[in-house]
Length: 412
Image (cartoon, rainbow, N blue to C red):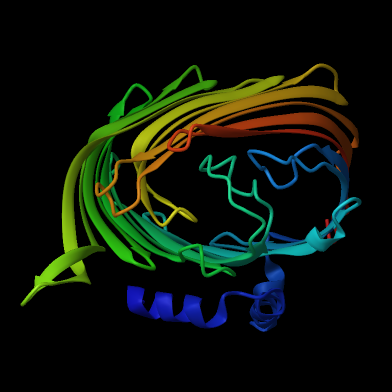
């Protein structure tokens, strides 16, 4: 299966729910498919009521509103000894009490397939499509705040692993993403990424790895291509703690256009577009610590690397700190706390014409009561603050919410 074929298939279908459901039905019609180890269908629904004191995430003229979100969903899984198939569809119906013009319907469709050919070789593939319009849709993953602009995201990835020996393994990964914005003022993005790696078991619950990668970011008016290499280690301590560290370097080349005045005889100055190229070397560092206890689950991660700043027309050096913890107080009652910090930075003409300098900080405490394993109630608060350092302005948002989630497992 060539990468070109995967990209063409992913672009053509973009995986709608009904298409995914048809694939599942065809698989179930194959002789022997009914003899799966696990087949499950899980319909779900969530109801969230929230108060948002800055629904546009604006630096001025803050507008507040109560928002109601109804989110029906459907998940299908089919697992056998060799295959792991999953399909899901989630639709979010958003209604604003004070700003009905912002009413929207978010959509998320996803499919995955994992297959084990033999004990030494396996592969995993995933594809999906989403439509969203909330300004804070990317805060938790990139720290970037967008306007109330509709975005259609199409993505897909495929990975394979090969156990060469009891201690040595090799792996390869490829992913594709396309972001299309319903606004001429926001740059679209096409993103290709690929890497290959070697993994070696050092013993004493420690694994080392060497990874080489490529990433290409295609924006409306500029392209960035980069090559990277990292070395890392994965260490597990007492089966509760996991420590992962990777470090390396990245070389990036960006092609873009600038408008310059050129002299035309006898005495005219004419604006023309001139092709420019910038080349940058930068470091890479990612580290994480995870704890998985009987009552407490927590993680702390740090990363510094080049990343596409979707919606901001270019790539940026992204620094990120993310901390999450959940502690079970009783069998039914638990509390959670998460906080994150993102800095997206690029100097003018470093990774394109535009400079980027945005800093985002979020804090999210919450409480959960589980009536059953399939029915729970969340109560939480979300504070987010973004500093736009190029213009010396900032925007903050307070959001309080209550959310009721219910699901029902069929064929279990």
